[in-house]
Image (cartoon, rainbow, N blue to C red; front, side, top):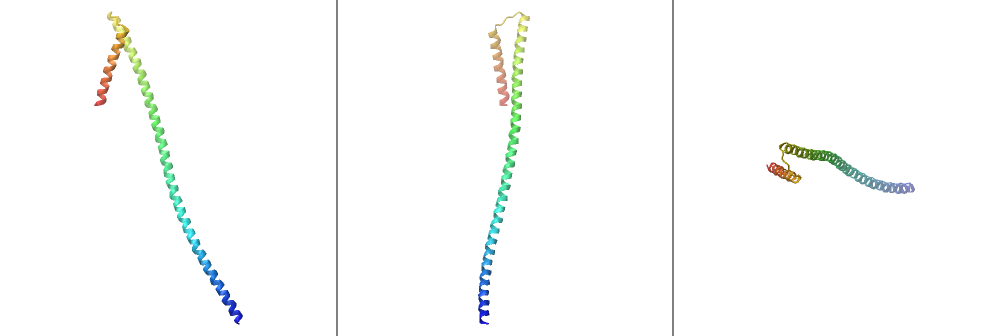
Length: 133
């Protein structure tokens, strides 16, 4: 009977030790799970932030493409206007030449250029006045 009591006591002590060890392992496992949950939440937050930044980047790309398209259109319109101005200057010179020929007045090419420059300066001054308004 003493031998059985001694074995039971030893078994009880071993089981209590294993139970404490299992409880400690369970506690450490819960801490690890809590850490993993916190890490998962942090990663999800970072992923959401990265997705927001990616969306902003995509929007910026679209805005840049739109601005580039508008810029190209403005440049083309400017080139068209310059070509039209050059054509109108040529027509103006021709009309002046025709007028002078009809009136019998002969101007030197230098006078025509000086008159064109004078009118260009007047147009520029009118434009500046309009810009100031």
